[in-house]
Length: 536
Image (cartoon, rainbow, N blue to C red):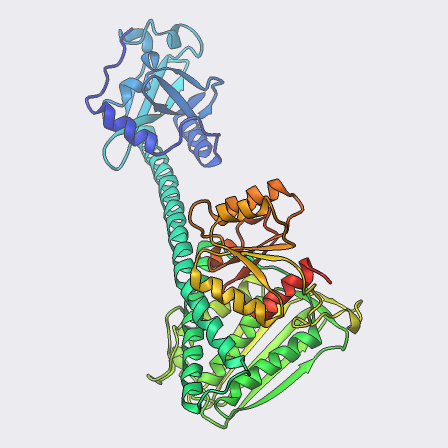
């Protein structure tokens, strides 16, 4: 028996093999089908996908053989990887290299062998697709060609696995980057948006009209920048498959009255008339993701307002049945040319002929994606100069079992005003934002600037509720929450973070975090959480 020489490029050959991360993995149908086809075409009882590592040949797929691997020294495939063409031994008894090989003299009693080298795009042979018989046999030209072709398909599948891993790795890096970017952008925006809102709502002092206007401009610009950041982050979550929906029971009348109020306020800035029609029952509830449903409707309304001339009319019709929610938004704006209709839901596209309009071109694309995630449909009909009609149809499940008295107002204070609240926040400006926000709703707070300080404080003090930033110096908010809840399993912790990617992160629950609020937090967000976790 002759042991095959070690290839001169062995180091790089092994690196190429290990890069696929395929050794010692489970059997896979896609490879098994190639092996079965090789056995069928070559008319042999045994066919293998054999990979040669430093010490052995390991079988990724096999037909007619029970073994999972053999030592490399006795592997026929160790010889085959030295050439590019099919390596064939038609009768092992007549070949000095193999006639006393234990694979020949014992089971599986190899009498003939043909192996097509599996050659990577870089030119390294990492193994073979081989056909084995217990009788002398020589493959015909057709069989040899088929074996070569099937061998190339094995490499194609391995390359595909590699590409998928690379894409997954790239997506992970992209998500990590955007998570950090989300935090870095939304942290200062939290201060800008929150402080401007607090100042606009503060009735204890009266600013001159000019300063009031400056403040409103600051508030508008901050919210517009926040909206743009949110759109880009939403787009990434949708494209990366990390987008999730949170279905809750929604009281229809209350929800759509809120939508009506918001749309009237938006339209008033351009003196637009809003005709709002809503067909729902008084005590009807339905299941939906409230935040995303609001986003869909308000995106369509905002789009209609943006492209409508002043003092025109916008029609909003909502119909809720036992099976579907239908939302129709019609404007009398500039409309869309027929040739541009197919572009309207593409990202970064703005096809209306007005260069002065603001926007990222993401709103309608995200709206369509949200609708499709909810298993609904969205249709557009429009003519240039005659306005547009967007119609959304969503499947819903309605309920009629609750009473009006069961509906808590989002701004109704039912929390204990004397509850002890701790906010863990490292950013000094956002500490001031938190103090001002909680002061507005009538509750005082304690503040810690790091996870370590929070843990130390909790060893000698008790808090009814902790609001935890997740991006902290030293130990982060996840680890801090885990340590805190291990000290006291009953401690309630809510994430208060500018990182929107953490909302769907399973790490929240694993580390003892019960709820999530995104910065900039609204007054209703804080009240809702306090009502739930610090009842009076």
